[in-house]
Length: 153
Image 1 (cartoon, rainbow, N blue to C red):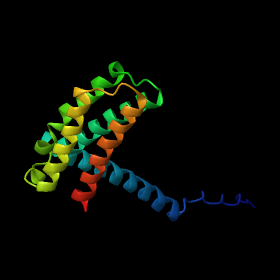
Image 2: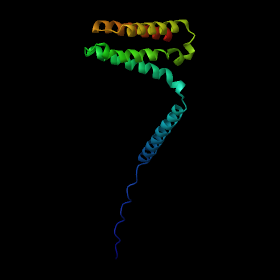
Image 3: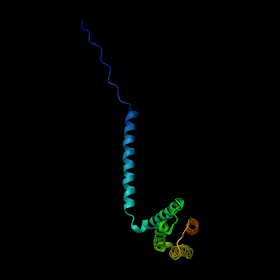
Image 4: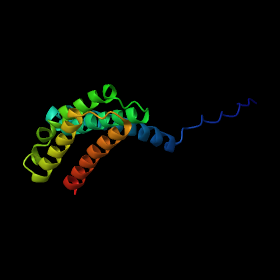
């Protein structure tokens, strides 16, 4: 009598849940890549006019931060501050062109004019000590805050 060896057990099958998980992970990855591609395409369609207002405000903030850092370092001589004040004044010339919707807004023009007047006064008689620089920085900051409060509502 011949005996046949018992049949080997079938190989274990992968769970269908694992298969679904792999398909879900691949779909999620492809979706993320497509979203990034679409967002970059939309960003690429923006022109310099679209970026101008934000860029101007970032430059303004950077110059104000550098003036504040100069004040914190107790380096308040005109040689340390004049370049930042000149840059702020030059940037102030672009306020109305950067915000064409507000160019004819009476309050916006008044805020921009007051900021330019403050910078003109600071350039005509540069701050010679930290107390004067603090006053100049605070005055410019007050003008900026007032404009943002009025224009943003």
